Length: 127
Image (cartoon, rainbow, N blue to C red; front, side):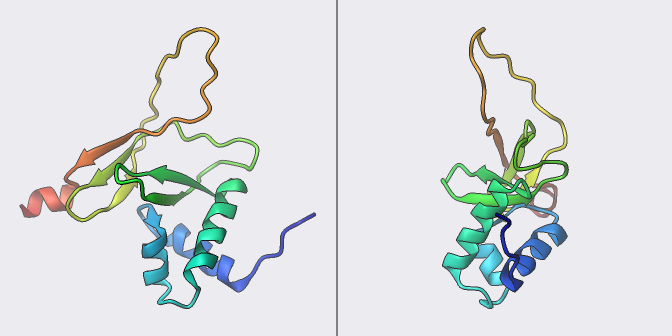
């Protein structure tokens, strides 16, 4: 059964596509100027993860950030890249270089979540 697209879903997806960094639920709500309620945003973001449209990044503080996927599907997510979290401006970005981490024989990795924390270029130059 196919899922119905709503105006709220279209608005959230457009926002993620136009963003140059990952966004958390609060950021999405703020940028949509409360046009969409918070619980709806939460459901939409999780649906997009399931459908392979965005990927989830869990920050050191436990907050979830969402970034658009470049070439993923509901069946295959490829997110073997690290992320950078700025401790000053709270910006979370995908870093372009994939990580290759070996696991012991017989192990089957399902997910890799690596976040580097520090100061982004802008905050580092302004300090």
